[in-house]
Image (tube, rainbow over all chains, first blue to last red; front, side):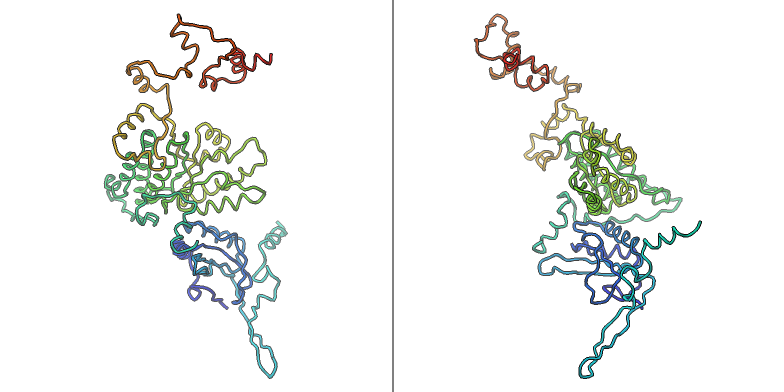
Length: 154
Length: 345
């Protein structure tokens, strides 16, 4: 199941050129960019891991795109998003946020029903990937893959 | 960050101000369309459309002296113009290396020329932004293990698309300190200079002799810096002439606008023009205060009036001469003058 989160999520995945022009738009508005990643893409999970600190003072999207690519290289099997933070007073919130990377396979969510008092039903979403330990939810870690490659006989 | 108006301030916190930047100057320039193989190009028209002349004329007008630097910038502009036309014909082999080194004493206009260079490169389409991020060692090198790489990368990300101006770049490398983090910053810098050639132009500035030492101890750096501009060869006579011409104007654009141009005139004894000028000038006795006169000087001029100085007063060489004396010579001079040397031994 293809996860739709953030802006542009119903569109096909953005190319690097499209990402660059979005970053350019954000910088033109004076928003600070930051890169985050996670392997727990529950819609209510607000706490993604930060890839470095937010990038303040950027003028050109090339630097931010470089950070995105570095993050993709290290975590190819995780969700990566770019957030643009509007620091103006009265706003002080994320103004734009979109996915720039997703795992090759997305198992999706199941619906859990919980029986409560008076025959009420409580519904909750459970990502299938969450059953596996953190770090291995969407495929092996980069380190593991390297170990496997090294153990292979020549 | 306390209002919509502060946005610009926040964004340009570390960027040098570019007051003469035209509106929309930070927007990426238009990409020139490709040409057919048999097309002909009018280079003069090409040059005019690139807007090179405006910037070079402004440079010529606003900066005093610096003849070799201006010539060199003109050459670079011409080279890039040809390269740009070649690209349109599909002939170019990758982006040219534009990293530069500006050597010269403080106040010779290195920062100003860097700003102009950024604007020139932006105008010609070699930079997406005309902005200059000026840093020193403190901004690049960290204080503990693991601090340098993120710090350097942050600065480089900020400078992406424009010019990174490293003032006194030789401080990055300290030969005497083996465990200095400067080397790490240099390695990251080199990596960026090579991999992000079309995104970033690095200009390193500093004293000529120290830069030479820096480049000789970092061969990788010197091979990646394509253009060396020397700001030290300033002809005193010519600069003085320019200054006199400028003095008639109400405003001194070259000097008053934030230290642009040549605020201090170095004295160059070897300069033939200056020597000629000095020889042609009518000699007249200099009116100096008596206290500043050197005793030897006075004795030569008035041999008959030579009088012994009163006992108890100490005769010391004049202050400029004292500043030139070092080590044993200073001791001898002091001893002769009946100073501390005589008292001690």
